[in-house]
Amino acid sequence: MILPRKAIQYEKYEFKKWEHHESETIVETPVSLTVNNHVWITFMCTPVHLEAMAVGFLYNEGIIQSMDEVADVRLCEHGDNVDVWLNHDAEQPTNWRRTSGCTGGVTAVDLLAKPNVSLRENRLKVQPEAILGLVEKLFESQELYRDTGGVHTSALSDGETVLVAADDIGRHNTLDKIAGLCLIKNIWPENRILITTGRISSEMLQKAAQLSVPILISRTSPSSLSIEMAERYGITLIGYARTHRFKVYSNGHRVGL
Image (cartoon, rainbow, N blue to C red):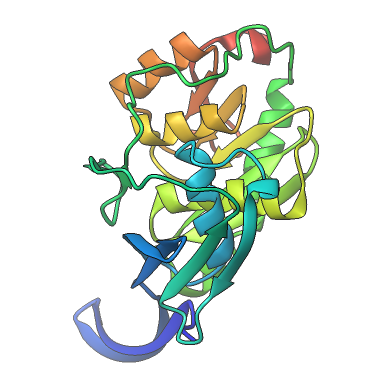
């Protein structure tokens, strides 16, 4: 089985002196997704929550809508392939598009088309202080980051507590893992707030919309296309969130703007 962290040694130069250090770094490894005995794609990812990532990817791509469609999901013995068996046929997309996601994300979804959900009528409202509190809870949940660095974390909240969290070297993979964990554990809160350390690209925005998330928070910036998509979908998009400040890019009425 592949572990998510690996022991390393390095030399550090600081204040005109060399120092030898032993530490750990985040693991990046290829993991294939096999659907109904056909290999679809290979993820470059961190080997944690791999079954959830596989199921969540199929959900975010619109291949499945619930776990009722999944007959079995199994990580192979060597940890480099996830087998998913559906109780129906699934046509493998022939036009995978590389996204701007780190580690080379792919999707077959038309990112410029609207998803089958509109969040404009969602009445969720939260106070700015609650947003700041959720950002702090996200930072507190980053155990793997504190040990290794170089990893993204995303979390789903009901507005008060963090319900599920996922780590990965690829920010897009964390949202697939969040979707998979929600499916597997049957966690679908009425109020959904997604907090992530990753930059909000169009792919990240699409995955949030697929999860019916009316409020999406990132510790860094959104892209121009993700802002346009958030306006169309009715998502409140927040960036540069820290424990004492944030910026609102769309639909600010949900946070008292």
